[in-house]
Length: 130
Ligand SMILES: Nc1nc2c(ncn2[C@@H]2O[C@H](COP(=O)(O)OP(=O)(O)OP(=O)(O)O)[C@@H](O)[C@H]2O)c(=O)[nH]1
Ligand SMILES: [Mg+2]
Image (cartoon, rainbow, N blue to C red; front, side, top):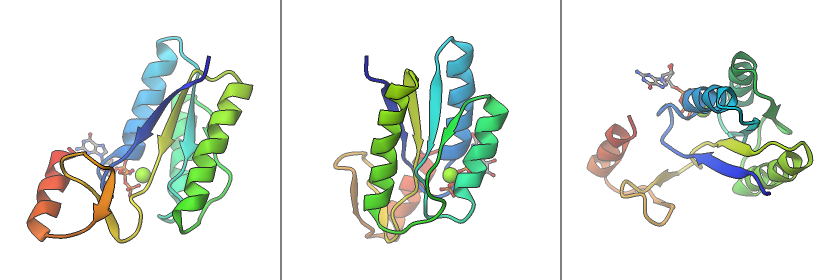
């Protein structure tokens, strides 16, 4: 059976990595075999942060590159992590991501990503992530 994939998306500093760790710990305690994936290759030390979080949760972290720009490498890491999860029989994959530079998530959650527009919209998006 393919692993369940949980991809954490949200604005910078909204708590994705912290939630990844909490979720990983909770899922492990429920008898699952989760794996964390470091796909935030944008912010310095984001990969290392997830490795520490994974260690605290007692959950393995899949990490291949520490820094990269452009979405192709992030997608490759996420895709490869699912193959790794299948090989190592992890039933849940939790992917920690970063907001792509110069873009933002839509406040209504529809359509994935679009270019940043108004300041007020950005604010409402930010407050809705907490
Ligand atoms: N009050 C509160 N603070 C939180 C919560 N989750 C995370 N934080 C804090 O918010 C800050 C950012 O948390 P991260 O988990 O690193 O957020 P992130 O979305 O991964 O951030 P980036 O990787 O920079 O995009 C840290 O100081 C956390 O301790 C929460 O549920 N409540
Ligand atoms: Mg993070």
